[in-house]
Length: 316
Ligand code: SF4
Image (tube, rainbow, N blue to C red; front, side, top):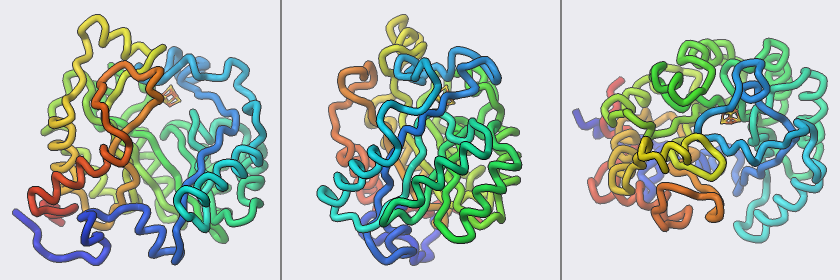
């Protein structure tokens, strides 16, 4: 059933509830996310949850020391904010603790790192990417305290809602872990973003699309990031591709399923990302030859071609 009720959160040209516009509505100016490598590692590599990491994770880029990155946090952020100011005219910033598992440390260390980011001028808040099985009560309480005064988004990697796929890709956590983390994080005054990937070996589009229904059913989820599975050098997935065990989606397949996903996604959930990118020098497959904004618009143009929008097939 096509849901034709207009929703004010949907941008009329983009036809989705884009996160960029959500931030503009909320803060009244252009806001950019600025990445920082705070030197975390990952429990799915060091043996505490698993070894080897997820099959698509670029293990060669992991710091063997598992300590703070070479360039200090403040220097990384100052450079990143200057770039966004100059290139996009951004006025305010959200510091994105992106690399690896950004709650994987003692709460005192987390507090110190998050506080340093929040102390920089024009920083509105933080976005913290992590695994759903790496979220202690102390870390949740810390984010809750910060969210009383500043913007906080917790980004939880689910990647697939299918436990068999999670096992095959060596994620080291289950759908149940994700649901448990979302439930514990809901109602604490901060945003929660779910990460999904489409294109795992053996995954059917119809199965993947059920993950939109899953996110819709979780009131705490406020945004989503979606990207295609892609293989980069130094990963098990790249080896699988070379052995013929991973056949990447075509651009047309991905765009069609991403548009289907958006049509099923509730309008209240903002969309942070619709594609994944990696440096050309380590990209193995797929090679679609598109720049980032072309990937973004490939999906949005498919909605336009259909004269559709996010939530067009969402049923409450
Ligand atoms: S959880 Fe993230 S950082 Fe850890 S191995 Fe998987 S993709 Fe890499």
